[in-house]
Amino acid sequence: MSTGEVLVAIVIYLIVPLLGMGTYLLLVKRMLREDITNPPIIELFVIFAIYGAVLLIALTSLFWVWSGAASLGTLFLVFGAPIVMGFIAYRTRKRKNKSRYHQWTYALGWSYLVFLPFFLFTLYLIV
Image (cartoon, rainbow, N blue to C red; front, side, top):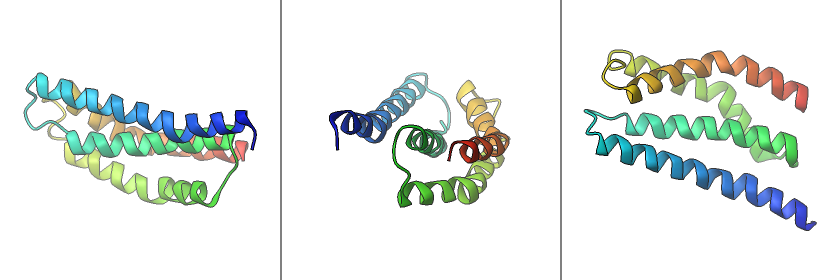
């Protein structure tokens, strides 16, 4: 494995997830500092994880070698994630007017269901 390949792997599988986790933690800190009532902390964690997985699958298909783990992740993103995101959107529908964080949680939950066909089509073209 060349140095370039190692760097690509480090960026895709280490740097990108760490940046996502850091962004999530900063968002939680901001919600707690703003004293949001019933902040959607768990829902946002799941949203970050699912959209992060979409990003990792896209980066893997563009810059790395497809693997069994990528196939399993894609399988979850196609069949499991829409159910989870639909549940998040349904659960936050009544609280979406509490704060902008609740609005974004609701919007990101539903947008995944709209985004999924685009993701599948793009993945089909790439792979």
